[in-house]
Amino acid sequence: MGKIERKYLAHFIDAGFGIKGASESTYTPSYVRLGKDLEEYNEELNPDVEIKKNILGEQSVQHNGYEVQSEVDPYYAYTGDKLFEQLSKIANERKTGSDCITTKVDVLLKEDGSIEWAYREDVWVIPNSVGGDTSGVQVPFTVYSAGNRVKGTFDLSAKTFTPASDG
Picture 1 (spheres, helix red, strand yellow):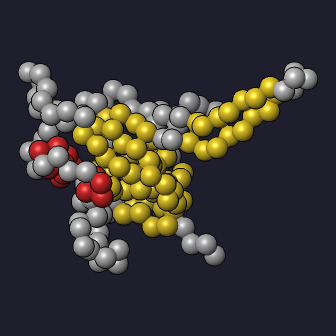
Picture 2: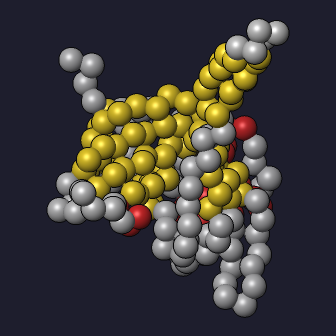
């Protein structure tokens, strides 16, 4: 068994942010793959775990879920990049609430390019700063998972997600 190379774990953010007012049946997400300038990207699961010991020395563990978040830093501005356009709009107009909600798809690829698994979920995308150094304009941001995680399939060429049927 070989180690899976990091390039096979892909993360896509919908740069359209649901285009306000569009119905789910008429809206087509515009997924952008993260990673062009990232040397590292991790989803920190932040498990909510409570460990208790009673007077008998017995230990119990209660696991209440996760508070998942990830940092995208650096995120460089490229001309025509739809995600950069949305991030700068959020930052420049100081948008909050539902204006920062979109979806993310995590995909594990096989070496032959087929999909091992794919999950989509709602996320909050919050810019942390605007600026950068001499290497270029940057808008690093944090992605906070908001739930509604759904398993399905992802078409890499069309960049479309299809939820698995409950069948």
